[in-house]
Every structure is written in structure tokens, then in C-alpha cells.
Length: 362
Image 1 (cartoon, rainbow, N blue to C red):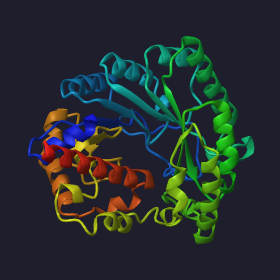
Image 2 (cartoon, rainbow, N blue to C red):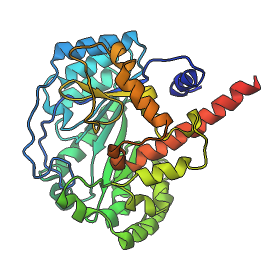
Image 3 (tube, rainbow, N blue to C red):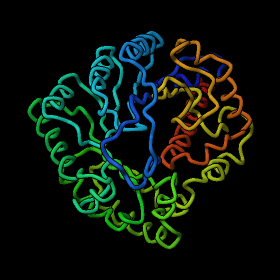
């Protein structure tokens, strides 16, 4: 049984368990200026970042709680922080699964070789277009050539060292400027030799983002593009099939309706929970504030600088978030939930349902 499902099953049976995954955001600094980013056109204050010593303590506590996965993600570009690589090495020394989401521009060959040697598990590279002109336009900087060069370097050294790690995933933000280029992007991704290609419809954070979001006609057109691209995706892990239903693209920024639709015929029990994040994951922001998912909840009362992971995980704040989900009281920030996570919660619900049924049959 999947470890995440096993822990959720413990909660279902009244036995509290520890988090499976912890997300950390090392910095808000970024070397690019993506058109669709939440920070585009804003002056982002680089807040009081957690120190390396604080991260060492977090990772030590995570190991003691048998946390299985550390995900290094952004508000900014994680590798803009000089000691992020040191954090990554500690993750692997602790025996945890390591994941990082990056724009892929700041790797050096030395860093790539070391990451492969320490057995880093998963690298998601944000890469949004198959041409230099469009990729550089979307990211507000010269990123295309650097990303391609670094992907090729990863493939080269994985081959030399004879390992399948790290898994290389391309993450593309779908928008008006690139939706017609998906087949070309898929061909490039396959040519480069990466393992996975995932699309995330743009979530609107700014007025420019609103202009870049696909309209109904474009969403219907993309359905045909996705179907064609999916036929070409053999051998590649992908979520293209998700977009055979164009309404998902239209729901970005107003996902509560879609989430409720998935559970509307279910009773108020553990299998009707709209989101399982508060039971298996916690997110630690750049300044130490902790919440169950992403970094959208501004109501958090818990900071890792003053409490341990264990204290926060079993705190009144986290218990209240779990109660809200049990009662299907979705906070306003759930509107900005991403399509991928909504579908992932549905997958968890299905796996958990099977696990409960299997347990009853014993």
C-alpha cells in the first residue's frame, strides 16, 4: 500500500499520524519575470528568510516524524538562494525523497553531477514554449537556451553515471500565447529525453494574467490539440488527457465549484473530504509561517521559528483546517487551487476508498 494512503487510513481509523510530505519555499528572489506569475509587475519584498540552521532543525525534526518527502518549491526561484543546494544534500543524507521545482536556468555542470551522485529524486523544470522567442517572452529573460543546455547536461550525466535519477519533469503553464504550440513542445520534450510533461492552466493573479487566460473558444480548441498531442506522448508520463474536458481550463481561479461537484453526492465522512492536504502535507513559507497547502492561507497562526513540526501538526490551527474540510467549508483561497491538485485529491479519494474496502474484507 502507498505510504501516503496508509497514513490517511490511520486517520480514517481514528489513529493520528505524522505528515507524509513537507513543502518549503527557501526564497522569494527570482532571476526571471514570467508574464503569468503572481509577482509580475509587483515589487516583491524579500522577507526574513529562514536560516540554514533553521532548515537543519526542520529536516532533523522531519526525519524524526518519519516524513517521507521534502518538496522545495517557490514563491521565487529556489536556486537563487546560495545554500539551497546544501539543504538538498541534507534531505538526501536523511533518506527522504527530494523534489525541487525550478526554472532550470541556474544549474552548473558541477551541481548537476553532484545532484545525480547524491541520488536527488525529482526535478520539475518550468519550461513553457518550444521556441527561444516565445519562451524568452513568457519568462521575461533569456531562459530557453540555458534550460535546454541544462536538460541535455542532466541526460548526459545520468547516462554516464548509469542512473534513472533524478526524474526530469517539464511543467508548462498553459496560456493564450502557447496553447497552439503544445504538439511542438511535446516533440521537443521527447527529443530532449525527459521523463514527464505536465500542463497547468494559468491561474489568474494579475490583470495581465487575466488577459493571458484562455477563453471558451480557445479552451475548446485546446481540447483537440490535447487529444492529438496525447496520441504522440507514448513513453512519456503526462496529464494531457485531463484537458479532454475544456471546462477545467475555464474553472481556474474559481475551483471551489468544481471541487464541490466531485463530492456533492457523498456523505460527510472521510471519503467526502474535498481536500486531504491537512492530513498529509504541510507547507513552510519563506519566513517560517506554516499552513496545510501551498502558501495561500493568510490566516495561519503557526510559525516554525517558535514551535516544532510536531507541535504545529497537532495544533488547534491544523485541527481547525481538518474540521473545515470534514464539514466541506472551503476557504476562499481554494478558488485558486490548481487543476492538477483537484485531480490528485480525486485520485487519493479513489485509492483510499479501495484501501478501506480491502481492510473491511479482511
